[in-house]
Image 1 (cartoon, rainbow, N blue to C red):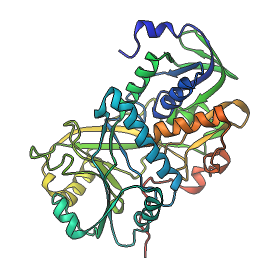
Image 2: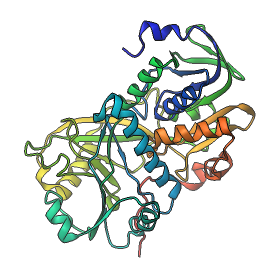
Image 3: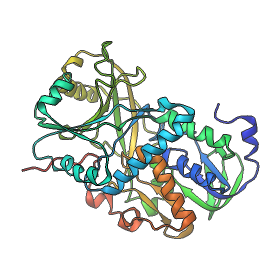
Image 4: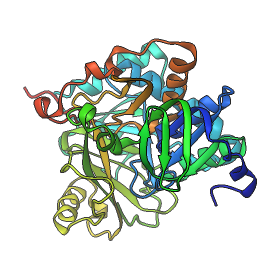
Length: 397
């Protein structure tokens, strides 16, 4: 149960300093940071925290530090890792699994190599592994064209759905107001819900992932594109060779696919990073077609031959909410100074949740500057610039 009866009593007031619409990883951590700073905060979600339509609703997500020369995201990851571990240590340490993270690198892939000076500058531990070391450490991986590996020992997997729900539950216990309701109309910073309630706030923050474009089509219709993403879990052998520490989380950028080891006996996870078709998060079906399964099986046979005949034990369908350049959106609504838009997770936002919550709270409460890359004016149109991938491809020679 998300709310106890005593916690529900904290919702009786309809006037707040901040109302946050969207109880995914961004909205939840923004709400927590503002609440802990002494603000009166209400968090609202129509389907519930990390529900099965939400981008934060899956079993697991990767947290890694490597972002090439986009150093601000490496800083976010390193800070978020610290905050996740601090928070989960008191409530449920299993919500972070330190599996390590392995970049499988091919010739000409300058993106992986560009992480090294950033890691050195920020004192983030890593190892460079040649093919001899890779084969010795990870014999279950058929390297093929892979020529070296970049290993991040402090990285790992986050239990996504359970993690967000834990943050909401704990912050509600500490006095945060939470309402599960749909917003049926809004006038400035006054919101009407489908339950007939009126919620007034000094500032409203919309952090509702793929629903942002639906709520603000005139502003975000060409700036954010929700795309269908499919995830696959294969039954792992009982010998532990696809569980940590024998198997880390990983990325094979050349094939634009990534995955996690078998965590909590859910299976070996793989997720193609190519963007799917544009979807409506309310109505898209969550079934994976046989053609998608066949494509992933072909990759598994080639890169992880020990799993060639492994059963497909589970699938998930979620969505990315992509900006054209993959940078987050953190800005005021251009026509409403007390309305903020926070989103554009672009397939890599979950890992940064607590750091982004801290960052947004600093902007709102301490007037900290917003990095220009996050502003609405910095967002090129999706239609004009194509789709961003969270795993940049290697340079073609």
